[in-house]
Length: 145
Image 1: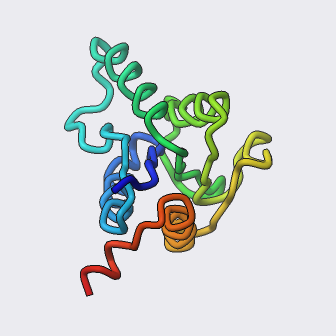
Image 2: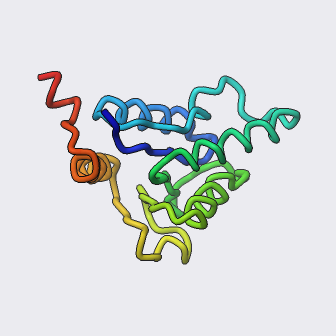
């Protein structure tokens, strides 16, 4: 049976958290297309062209992109590459909805096809409901009980 396909975007230093989101969405019956969360090494310049091409293909395969945004007051690395902003822009340019988890960071997060949640739990409920609406599927967590 088909299910909602979600690409997870986040700053690379949040890879572990993004991997946990990936697994959580999968447990709830959603298909997650962003495999970057399982890469052992992020940041090998010689592999950037291949990785970027793979990410764009996986965004195209997704129905929407979920992005973990940054709290402007939180402590974080001084430098991040901004790849998730490109991923989100690419998705929006392809007409795909965007699910923001965390604060809205820029003007594009105020577009009508962008929804925002403060916490991942609320985003998961939204995505489960959207999956049921679009695909009529049951949530796997319900099936396991």
